[in-house]
Length: 186
Length: 279
Image (cartoon, rainbow over all chains, first blue to last red; front, side, top):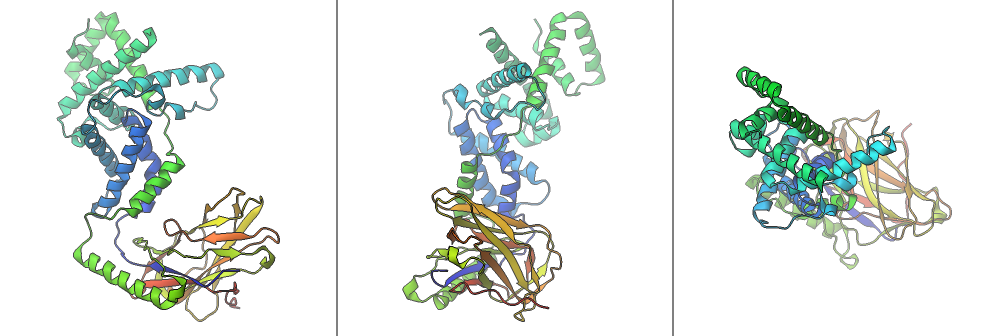
């Protein structure tokens, strides 16, 4: 039996249309985590970023103006990442274990074992190379290739001219290519 | 060796970002340079690899830890003065209610309010005692009953989160259902399907969650009552239920009406059965 009478109070308050924090959290946590891992050099850095992002979301959600929640979150992740990085300059490179998300890289279903192994190696190399890129290069590559933003959207998010997006993206791709070549040679 | 301008042409072509003049320039470059052709293939392959990186899932421990941190954090901005005043008034009201409802000898409950815009949400207070659902009382539901509450039905699911422990005996389960007395006449108008939640044999509490997606026959609450019925179906395995101050809550698809400010869910002693069903 219940050991004694117990009372649970509950509260009803705001009727505004602001999204509920816990709904946003439940629906978008994986998205934010994925993006945090891609933008970070290592797992612990990504976890710090993830936590900081949701603390900011919690703080600023009442000011959310509507529109795409995911777009709003993406901007917070990118901005938070930049501000955290500014405080962590000169940090050492992450180890392989800390490379962004390689442990979670799952093979596509239906691939043969050899293809799986090759793909796994390729992804590991790619993620290690991403971890070695400068933050500017990694960010622009992730926004373009993973988040599929166009030049104008990237320019707006990073507050740089569209022409700079194009040239930076080009240099980022070449930097990644060189790192991957180095991995192959090594 | 390719220069920066040529590389930018190759890169821009991947994004379809070249003008017609640049496109013509690129074609001449590709025609005359094996290195450019090779690089374009490699850049396209890198791009494909990036685009097929799998989505990641946030680890459960990080997810829970972050949620607790966020809940514990106080908003630094956004709350208007009127909202702050309203919250302060509500807090005082709730503290007064708790003092009234709970004799001092049982300790003061510390309320933590969950504000869920647009929906009626019940956030468990910190209950100092755990609720024990004895095995020998199988078949007898334990009912948590709300105070009268009014709200406009919005449609959508109802959810309940609580903690339960079955000790280290395998096979424990908890049956949960909701009951609604829409007009507060003391008779149940609607009961949900019961949900069976398996309880593990690990030491300590386990968070359980259940969702009722389809709630046919729901309507507005007019000074109505909401009941949460908990049942231990086992004759052998005792259960302990806890309403954790941080994590337990009941979410109902109602828009609260004015006057439904602070409501209480009470757990009567002795595991009294719920009110009779209408009809």
